Image 1 (tube, rainbow, N blue to C red):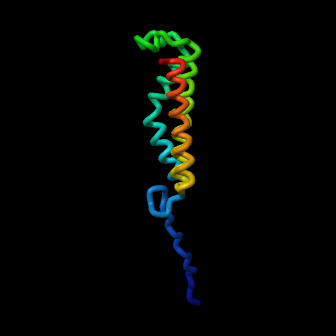
Image 2: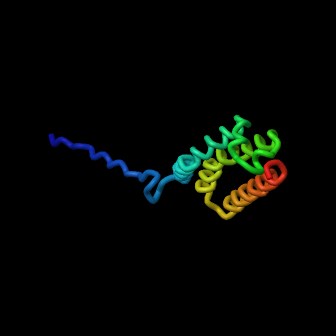
Image 3: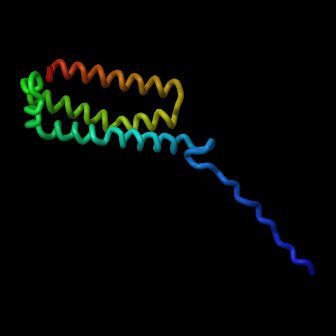
Length: 124
């Protein structure tokens, strides 16, 4: 009796994030993590400025003359945007469509307008 070995099909190798067939969600997570590494220090600084109003004295000139509430609100808005930035970039990379890029551009534009307006009202 001849022994028959059943041949098992070799598993097909699928690429990871860095290959041609990586999932968009993994790409978004990877890019979001990289962006978070770049903004980690500014996030920490913005949170320190927002939670310790006495740091207002570190900025000589106009910032030292600003109201405490305006100073704290300004830094909280900057901190919130910096925390949201890696998620926003990761989502944009995962979707990567014209509509998504337009949404991201609008969000970033609104943030800058709000930051400039608050800066002029409370800080400068």
